[in-house]
Length: 257
Ligand code: IPD
Ligand code: CA
Ligand code: CA
Ligand code: CA
Image (cartoon, rainbow, N blue to C red; front, side, top):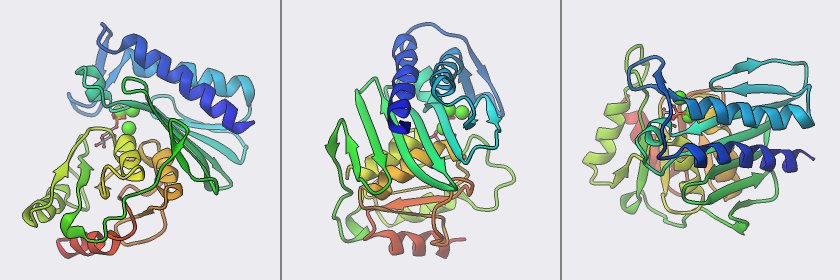
């Protein structure tokens, strides 16, 4: 069963995060000196892929560090072995394993597990979303004026078709509280359970948002791109809200571009 494998794989990855968190591990960088990848990212990824391959040897896998392990399967596992690697490397307990399962182009399962805080978010299409097995739902806050928002920033600002700082400025200038946790998957899950009312981020990758998208959606929220189009993991600009403040956030984002 896909759900069992998903939970087993998430647990296997999370075990690696727990073993390495606050310990010693090698760290290297990718696109910039602060775009990090640690020994734990690679070990967690290997443990996750091992579980999936053990149960489903022919499924398509798309994972941040391993890349695209393409097959003809209609089922694709979209994996972020550690979302929040910079936090992880600095001993900040906001990091997680994030795994989404896509079937025929539709997200059907998602799990985001922060083992340091022992928070497992899970969703199955059509069956709602949970945090540690308890049903969750988005906030009921009706107005953007009292919303608490969260965002994130890309490692590199060059070649940007949109301006993440201008968007941030527009919300901050309205006097809105805006937080930056450093893990897009956790940001999305914290919208799903009502801690935040809205999240936006420019330039995300499929593995940052795939699982979190379904968790927000199944918790009663709304996820689109910055034009209000339906969510796709393959488009980089993500807006996720409790639904009520979606139009207001879309307007604010588009008015400054
Ligand atoms: C990053 C985190 C961060 C977001 C970056 C992502 P990583 O993922 O989700 O919150 O702002 O855009 O790349 O590199 O920690 O997996
Ligand atoms: Ca990364
Ligand atoms: Ca990520
Ligand atoms: Ca990552």
